[in-house]
Length: 418
Ligand SMILES: [Zn+2]
Image (tube, rainbow, N blue to C red; front, side, top):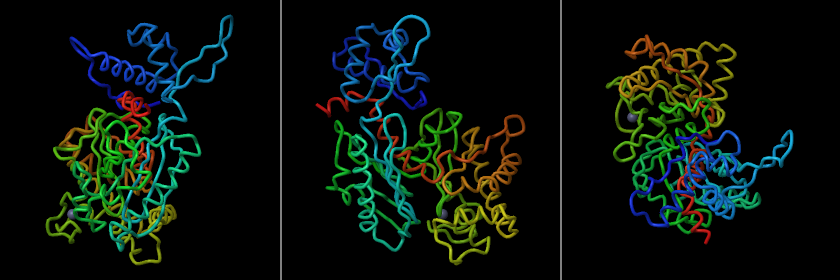
């Protein structure tokens, strides 16, 4: 089930409406109800809920079924007389989203269907820093091609792609700066143009949307999280640290889409040099490499993909240097997080990415700092919890953003199909 707040709808048409916009609105309303329902609703139930006539609901459902957006659920046996009830559910073999991620030490691709289920997920581990952007993106295309083939095998049609990048991305998809990758002014859409998995376009929507990975990870958590927390800070702790801010169920992207750079909040203005050019940024104390160095593991024969797992194993075993390093990292993180909570009045902080498996050790010092520094903490405690999706959040969030676009405006998909 998709959270209700994730299913945005077009505004209700007012006054003299065009027939087309009324149809679009009805399609979005009915599909939104089906997507958000706890149990498969019937046509009669949808009519009662939406105020539309039974005939209108039937016609709309017929369009949605023909467009492979909705299907009849398996009938549930009914006790007593009458036919078994058949509800409506999102189709498992309709359009799907392709989610991609480029990060410092891995590439990922995943396919999410209309109901939010992850149908394919693959990760390619490699240190991407020595590669040029074009080389890294070429490897990503290989992953995308495989994902498209997997989707086709399962009867799914990719309706678009979203790519998560650990950096600042402008509206045209230009990666202005990704300090930990060493990318500056990289024209990602142009470098990926012409590759089949990334060129299918639905109703004028660009086939590929490039977005900050922390933002997409926060969106992934919004729709997968256990409590449907509508306002929270999701922190992606990798080599770099980014945050996604969700306010009232919507991602807060900032004036230009560049919000959430929590990793570059200065903790000590004269502290260690940061890749951003500043000094003493949070990242220099709590980034993955900083934690490894503090634990005495820097330069150890430790592949990047196992660093977090190794830290968790050593912490589990009570290794004093690792426990100390995680405690210091958690304290530094807590200082920065307390400032953000004071500023934005958030009641939940989610430890995501590489922080999720380390949450057992990071959470206590984070909570200590919050209790000391957040003015309202005494009477309104802040929840700090590990993310549900962990390291795959950004790719899943990216793919989910594609299918939610269809849920919000199904008419676009139906038109595209002809
Ligand atoms: Zn910095």
